[in-house]
Amino acid sequence: MAIESSASPSPAFSSFTHLECTRCGERLARDGGANLCPRCRGPLFARYAPPRLDRAGVSGRARSMWRWHEMMPVGDPSNVVSLGEGGTPLLSAPRLGAKAGFTDLWIKDEGNNPSGSFKARGLSAAVSRALELGHTAIAVPTAGNAGGAAAAYAARAGLACHVFMPADTPPVFRVECERYGAAVTMVDGLIDACGRLVAERAPLEGWHDVSTLKEPYRVEGKKTMGYELAEEFGWELPDAVLYPTGGGTGLIGMWKAFEEMEALGWIGPKRPRMFSVQAAGCAPIVRAFEEGKPVSEKWENAATYASGLRVPKAYADDLILSAVRASGGIAIAVEDEAMRRASDEIGGSEGLFVAPEGGAVWAAAKALKISADLDPLARIVLFNTGSGFKYL
Ligand SMILES: *Cc1c(COP(=O)(O)O)cnc(C)c1O
Image 1 (tube, rainbow, N blue to C red):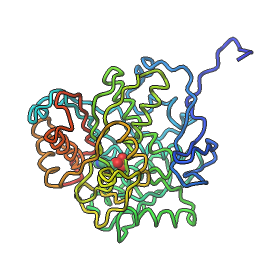
Image 2: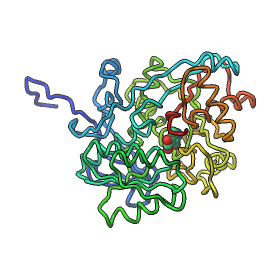
Image 3: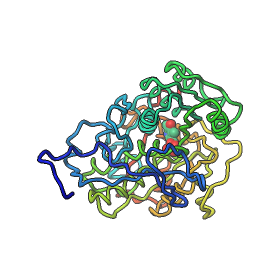
Image 4: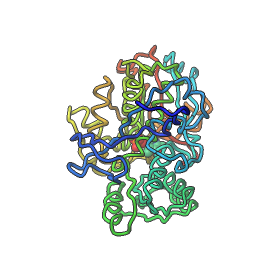
């Protein structure tokens, strides 16, 4: 800058500059309100022009997902809608690891997030942006936890919330949404049918659709898991990450975070192998991975008690598959019964009451060791994405 006043201007809270289509590269205005690419309907990513940012300085801030605010999409701090999401523990899991010969096993425990799952991260970001853009009502299709998180953050922000969930979703998820004041519609069908209803009704009713990866900001919340992993391991990413995949938002988000951190000069080019774990009763990503396809096909009659994994067709399946492949990872499915046993093992070994999705990744780790697809000496992170209390 040519002219400087004596007092240097305070750096911007956010360095968010524009949106970019992940499929065709179209660039869109930051505050134009686009949810999807108007040209090809591809998912949009927020892009940043960060100032020189000192990672140690950022680490010194309060332990919250919003400590990374320069790399978050909210421009005005007064629009941040927070319930204390993020900053979750990364726990070493030596007893659990020893059960299968793993020597450097870790669990990122997302179960203590507000509303009991890591959906809190995504919805904190999406609802903050909804508020910033002037929306007064949001709508969301959910397999369970996204509804609760959307309802909680909407309540906190003073926005109305409309949740659409499959009629056979366990009652606790509905009750939770209603406690947070949301209007809940039970739908005859799975999350994709719920998504179609939201897409139809949102424009008529004036609702802002926060379906994952059909709006740009839930992935921004979930990417903070990637920032936290790097920071907690001293800015050296682990060798492998096992992630229970429904819509894939967290996996895609972390992959984006790694790229951003390398651009910031915070980490080098090393990436973890990303393992996408699904349920045998709903494994569209695994099938596409095994068939070498760039996108998945809808999984018919999807069934698993891990409700977060009951997503028959992820909207951004192309991004999930390309990240898994680029990382040298694998997509793998596990049976519900194996998840149950694995959840008990985690509980009995490490004192964590995990969601079935958390059990799924441990079951997958053991299977990958047997098939020699995972080195037992590697530094491995399992994601427990939710609390077990909702699945009683
Ligand atoms: C939603 C959900 C998942 C899947 O997360 P995505 O990022 O959408 O793949 C996994 N576990 C739990 C507990 C969830 O609620």
